Image (cartoon, rainbow, N blue to C red):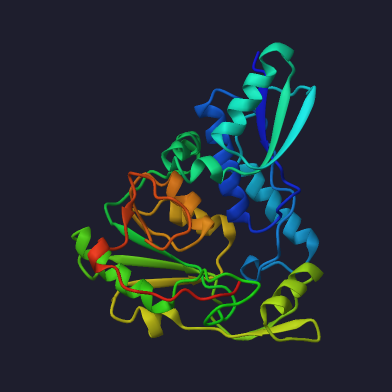
Amino acid sequence: MKRIYITYDNLKKQDGIGAQLQRIFGLYSIAKKFHLGYLHTPILNTLEELAHNVTSEKELKELLEDVNSKYNFPSDVDIEFDEEIYVHNVTIKIIAMTYIKNLLRRKRVLLKVCLPFGIMDKHPDWYEYSGEYLRPKFLKNKTNSEKIFVVHVRYGYKPIIGKNETSAPRFLPLSYYAAAVKNILETEKLNSTTKIVVHTDIPSKSGVWKPFQESKLSELSAIGYEIQKNALNFEGLDLRTDFFSEFPDVEVKHCAPTLETLSDLINAEVLLMSRSSFSYIAGIINDKSVYIPRSHGHAKLSRWKWDFKKNKAPIVELLSGI
């Protein structure tokens, strides 16, 4: 019987769905790599987002239930533990020290971990353990030979140019994507008539959003968004006309359902991810041509490709926001 188990601490950092799934993917992969026991802990809560298209806590919980029911990994056993150790960002040293200390005691120890990046950002190919497990569940058998190029455009709410005390620069400028698509079409030897599907969290029409989570209102206000009467005025954008007009066959899906978006990203013949955990996890499952921006905050899997060659990569200024 295994003596050391690892699980996701789903109480410490309840942010986006993609961010939390990436942590879970990482921890499952660490368990498999080091032959640890794995105890699956689902996402307990998440921050409300405009793109979720939910209007109440009940609807958000239902969305999480759908995500958790599909993106999960098998627990080795359901047992009681002699000791629980809380770890913020796990490292190989922490695992090794836990193993050594437990050699004589022979207790069943559970490592409750918030972040796997002390290991996974140094060994990103270990995510393949998660990808290999989930692939049979999500990859579709294509009935035609048409190649579909899927692009993920994560942009948040009207990003703020320049530095922001409460939000580090994270979003790529919209002008980046058309340039990257053009370069990847050439790299993949695809013509300009290739079907391109763009998934984005940018709404197609302007409007007013009234978040029901007080924490979301506080977060928006702290970053510098103008909140009036507990509401945010947001601006829509016609991505197809303003940024993808040079490509003849483009479909833009604005704020599509979460599971639909993930499915399209996972099953793309060519995928360009954004600076986002959401498309990062899709790239882990996708077994075709996956491209990652050089400015992405997490490490590149060896089978993935860079968006641009190093000497041709454009200089981009990242934008702040959420």
